[in-house]
Amino acid sequence: MTPLATPWTPALSRRACVAGLAGLASRPVHAACERVCIPLVPGGLLVQEAQGRAEGALVSLIAALQRRLGCPVETPLLPQGRLIRAFYETFEADVLIPGSPLPFDGHTPHFVPLYQVLAHRLCRADRGWTAAQRDAIWAQGAQCVLPRHVSYGPGYDALVQRMEGQGRVTWVRDVGTALRMVLAGRVDFALSSPTVAYAYLGAQSYAALRLDALPGLRPLETGAAVSRRSLTPAAQEAVLVALRGLVREGEVQQAFARHFPAAVLAREPLALPPA
Image (cartoon, rainbow, N blue to C red; front, side, top):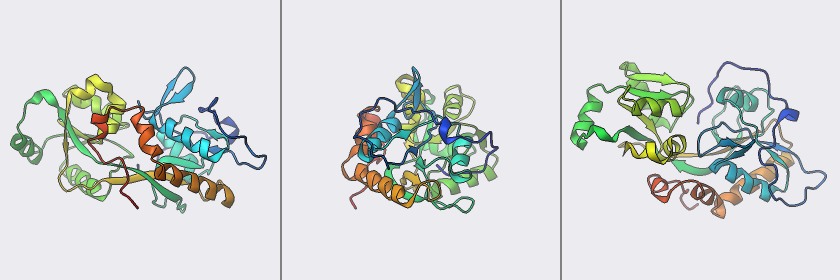
């Protein structure tokens, strides 16, 4: 997910962080252990609020990170715009998951790759198009809907730029809105990864879509951006070591497997290739 400038609302106070992982078992916290704030954007099975606490695949992943750190981890739920500003401009957020290694407004974070995602073309399954018909429709000007602040890498960005130049893109605020517009027949297709689509739609609506991998697009390596501004050097190193341990021990895939069917996960290469 690529950070972009958006209108800002009042700054997040570190004291105002809501402990979304309250009650998780962890090792005893050393007196010098530094509190880590990892804001999350609500998004279906990735992150959702249930009975006053956060749940989802990314929440399970952060819970595993907290157990490795042995430090308190706070997970406030924020809109995307607030989250980006809190990390890149006010330096009140310590980690972004998913995050980007790209610099933004003079701040280049540490980056730890955690998993891969692959953009697919999503249209309604009941259209009944053959593969040749679908390819012809895309070439002839099918209309696409896309959420802002999302990227699946350079190939995806080039495709989106080309379609936008042809007047074929409708922009919306979030992934859920884009996918619902496809299901309602208001546009021809959207671009998203299978896990993100399933996370926002659930099993029944996901089954009403046809997903096609986009030729020539490579999987995007995504992961955690760790601030160089908000944490001490010692805390930065502790977080980086813990994140790399999650990948090495397969805990990233375990977190996703607790929330997604195997058939959905099989559609894209979530696991990182061996180092």
